[in-house]
Length: 470
Image (cartoon, rainbow, N blue to C red):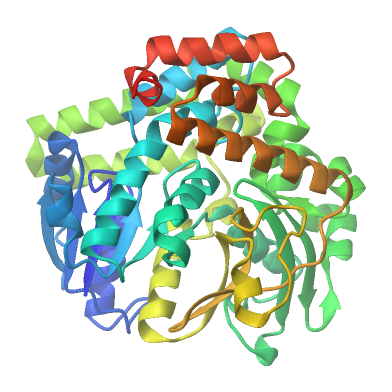
């Protein structure tokens, strides 16, 4: 079996290889998953060379055969699974996304609002090229998309490849696991399928915009008790960052990225007060890492471990009080990361052992399977939504969720409408549609500001400009 990693020079690659090596040796969490070859594809040859040096130094026993290439058609041919983790424009693009927005007093976070839309505008054309190449050379492959902004990129690739494209994020299922542990339940049962697991839950939304609305453990909804318990709620990073009083007012636990919506003014103020943005930090850190590996390839493994640990510890630092900036609590990072979600999905499809997870899927995917209506009836059939799913050898089966109502429904429909304008703008090269998308986002309070931000992205990022110059 061949796994293709698009963005093969990225930081997550060693974590994937470590798990696959253990699986080939019959140990670890995926003993039945046997991958013979992993192809690392990246347009940046120095990054590929650095990552192969890291893997050589780490020397995982029983590792699959590793192949690295900058040729997309060579990479795609024969692939059974694709982990798509491209970063079009690299960390330089992310820095521009942030700074152009911040200069206009607007949040520039890479997946929420205008920063995410700039990222999408330059990534959609490349994602479509990947989708068309897969359609031609590996039409049976499953595409597991890490690429941000995940909801947009998953939705656009499904236009070419249909339901074999699934978007993933580790934050929703991590939220469910941590909430289960906080009420004294067994978090390992969250992903198990069957009546005897003792854990069930209701979660719905979009990528980086969703809510955990019920959590049954042993047949009783434990979420109200969790929200009422100060000590238990302190174990939930979402409650600490957004505020226990607000999550109690909601009566549900929001995805951590709703910090940027619920505390928009505060998040913007914190980011603007920092010495550097998240993108600048990553650009500085990663540039130093790749330069160090090029100079000292024999130390690549040690250099990667140090850089990875620092990256994880500082994730979403602007959402935490200064007193908690030194490092995240162990319970906050116990979800396993993107790679665990991707490997859970891959294992369920490849081995047939069913698993339950929260995925980005088509709004009509459950409709086509059992004849019922759309998962979120207020959205289009082709809209990508984030809901609990059961995955097995027959594919991904979205599970029914309770209706979205009120302010949460309004936020979801507004943001999804903006995402669809971004997709149309990127595919058509239409600046007016892109302006409408930015101006309509809930975190943008002026159509004129939106126009200046869009003009700034076009002027300062050649890849964004190229989207509108076709």
